[in-house]
Image (cartoon, rainbow, N blue to C red; front, side, top):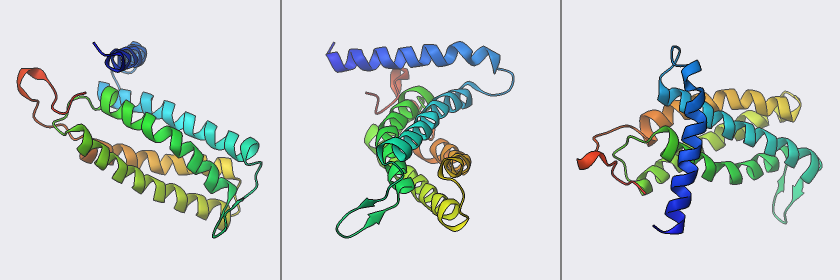
Length: 178
């Protein structure tokens, strides 16, 4: 078995074991898939907020980035830094941990995932601009409130569009599997 396949199997198994270990505590209030989404999404969201805070305060030092043709505010730049890390992690967790039962090929899922995430980017940008630049709120609490709206949008669209469950291929294999 190739190294990357072994690594994928190990990571996926470890994440599933860790997440599913806590599911019995929540079995009565939500289905397994919803719990996995909450756990994986919660981790990725926490990572995103942490990266935002660290980038904004310590990497960018609350200073805008000046390009020859554009100036990017520090809160927007910090948001983009976090996105570069959390986008691939989020897709991996969604595809291989949360929404495993799907008939959509991986490339198609990645395209759909990107489209939904693009929508999330616009929502993030719009809410951050509104809360920080218009309302004058602090950036980190603004990011936290923005996250509430974006997570709700993301879950509904990922479940009903990107990773919509379909017919399982012969032999119980999910088509488009790694």
